[in-house]
Image (cartoon, rainbow, N blue to C red; front, side, top):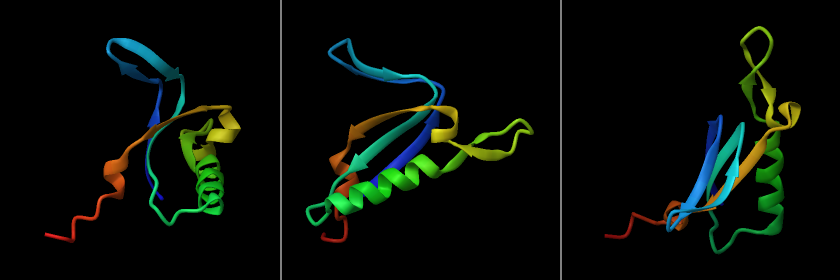
Length: 88
């Protein structure tokens, strides 16, 4: 399982000009799932993501997690993250 995590003030997914989903402050996650990934892998990644301390505290230090701020997640499937470029 591979993920690219970006902290956002807001994010949305639009298809054919229609907003499918949107969030406020939180994480936009591009997620690539590999054939040998398990449910345990997903749970581990979800827990680590929720505990990342990437939001500023009252002193401006990156010391607050997504859970602490009650932030949102927007997860977008991205199969290219699972690509294996080592084969010609």
